[in-house]
Length: 219
Picture 1 (tube, rainbow, N blue to C red):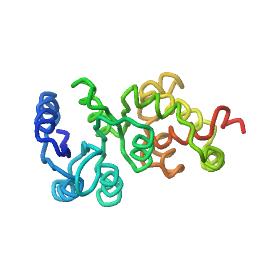
Picture 2 (cartoon, rainbow, N blue to C red):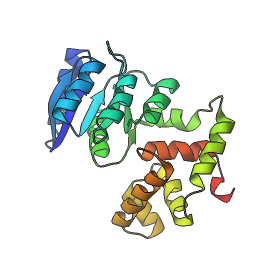
Picture 3 (cartoon, rainbow, N blue to C red):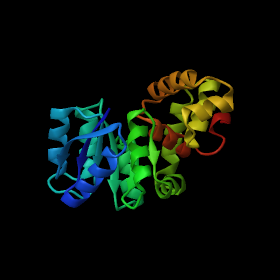
Picture 4 (cartoon, rainbow, N blue to C red):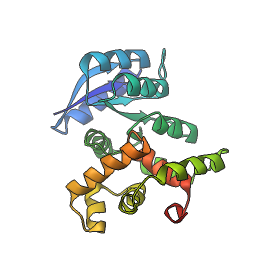
């Protein structure tokens, strides 16, 4: 059973999320929180597998909560669920350690997929959010490219093959089929890659590949 904490300051939204998640059969909402500080406190108390957190909350906003949860409950995965998919929100959430970013206009099935992906060690982004992540060009693009290239240089050729496909949004199973390797082998590669790159999750690794630009593995 996947244990979830839902953090949102709108009780009706929380009730709806609970109904959707618990309809899946393999997800249980173990706690709720109405602000970011309460979300961190409840996470420390209940140790959920996944925290669904809104951005616009009182006391401590969701983005700050994501960063604090990363520090204080590293075994818990966070997924941002919000109505606001603006570029700064997306990038700060993902760089802060979120394993997913889902918009509130998503379907119930999409929300369930996001929770399952986070629990399974994968990452999930709503399609609209993916377009933001892949299309954004930040003012510090040049130094970020240098840093990304330096970190990616630590990878072997095979690890580079894996992370390139990971950055395209492929699952471990899809990467395995593409490279003619087992899913378990790819999972091992991904764990090793994340450790080498000092990334918390697949999304952060994908951001590094994006920052490095096309042809980074040939540089």
